[in-house]
Image 1 (cartoon, rainbow, N blue to C red):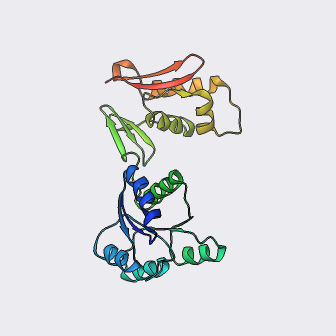
Image 2 (tube, rainbow, N blue to C red):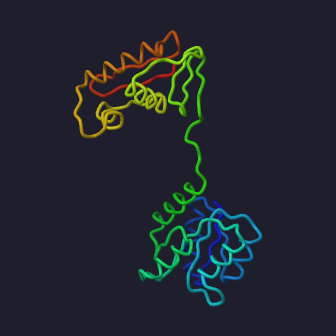
Image 3 (tube, one colour):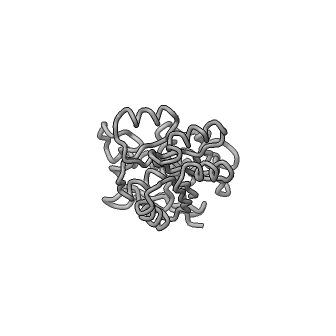
Amino acid sequence: MKIAFLEDDANFAEDIVRSLTSAGHEIHHYLTGRDCLKAVSSDQFDLCLLDWEVPDMTGPEVMASLKLKGNIPPVIFLTGRDAEEDIVQVMDAGADDFIVKPPNISVLNARINALHRRANPQKSQPDSINYGHLTVDYVKRKFLINAKTVKLTEKETELALYFFANVDVLLARAHLTKVVWGTTPEIDTRTIDVHVSHLRNKLNLLPQFGWRLISVYHQGYRLEHLV
């Protein structure tokens, strides 16, 4: 991730730059607000990491100027100021996060990555996947065999979608109970067995069709793709 980092304390900045670079980020460090503003205004950055108190131009002033230009990346303030009114001020002004110095590097990196994911959402899976005779439509929550929709109950649909999102992964019975049936009700193991049996037959999850939906004794279930 390409990050514009505004910080006038060179020694502190060196430690942050080293740590974030080791985490795989491309860090461009600026000692003055004007240099940071000029760089972000003329180049493409994924995120701004701004100090508040910089001699020539404060972090909030840099953010305000960038907002006026209309092309501002997500902003995290990394500052020694920790008063409630300061946090409220910059968050209301458009900052996306606020971290007090000195930061825990692992937490800082996690929050940078989390903010980047929110600003750049990625699909975790395509809208649909075709497996020869079987098509899984994740958007419409449907399963089709030879282009014809297979009739499934709501729980069968949820269970099937979860299996196809975790192909070749052993899923514990307790885990499936929580994810598909909710955490409160205790369901009989036979209930899951019945649903698995229905899916196996309705969706042709059989070796001759390139699939195997198996029960692993005392452990759980696994959908295996054989081709």
